[in-house]
Image 1 (cartoon, rainbow, N blue to C red):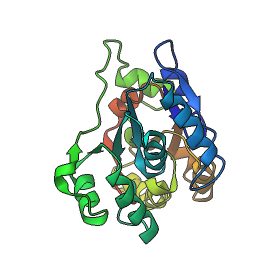
Image 2: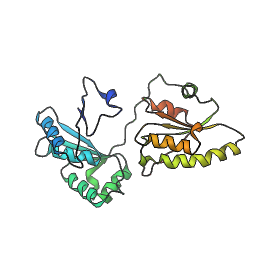
Image 3: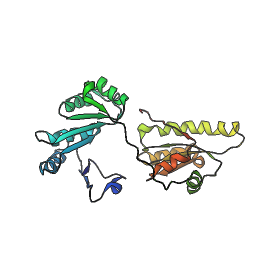
Image 4: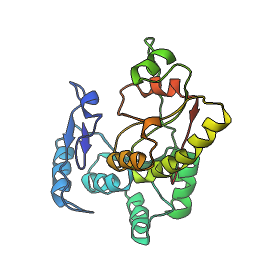
Length: 247
């Protein structure tokens, strides 16, 4: 089973099935909601769960409380979400929770180093397991087909990014830079066409779309939204940009 603390996200429909049950824990209070703790402990005590796997700090605290005093093991994965910028309370909380977590995973060596340096978790307790990549199917879109679907001319140079449209991703900076860059590129390349492609969705989408209009670059920016096969859109990019504030 997969428990979403706040709400089922875009991927819930894809993972929901006979073997996977995606449930909403319906968290209403921050940072602790004891109703969620009771609900999770009730599921754990049914005896059908052997391992609880939490992701990032907010979920870790519920994983610890759900498994505390039981025989169920708790594995926690840290995805490197702004560890260095966290305040004293969050750092102390992470350090305390680690003591009651059976296994700790980091998605990169830099995340593991940050957990050791900031949370003071011993290096030997942290296992680095990189994010998995799904193998592409044989039915792949060609660059030309993907461009046609988005209304992009075949000879257009595409610069893009894939990610959640949230503040931490820094797409507001990217749009500001694009406003400067697009003018220079057109002058330097004798009229060659360029397009900025952003694949993904999130809480900042409406703000970013408004920013693109204000900067008068909306005709050279495409917001493609959430895509089930983002690899097809990566395939058509000539240059990938990572504008994140923390990654």
